[in-house]
Image (tube, rainbow, N blue to C red):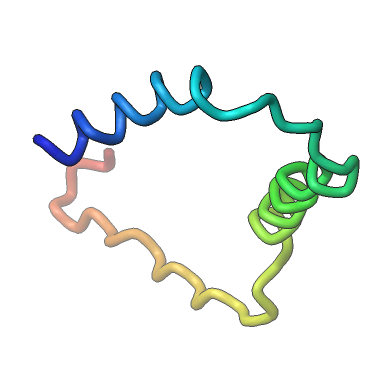
Length: 66
């Protein structure tokens, strides 16, 4: 709990103490987009192995015809 409080305090106080930083290079802004595109591609790409076929459903042999 104390570690979270220290982290929260540093997030709130460090921007007031540190000088303003220049914006990051444009390439760094593309990194999250590239990671997201890679994850979407991997989510929808086939794995290369076939799934085993499902067995047929059991037959109803009690004579009711349903």
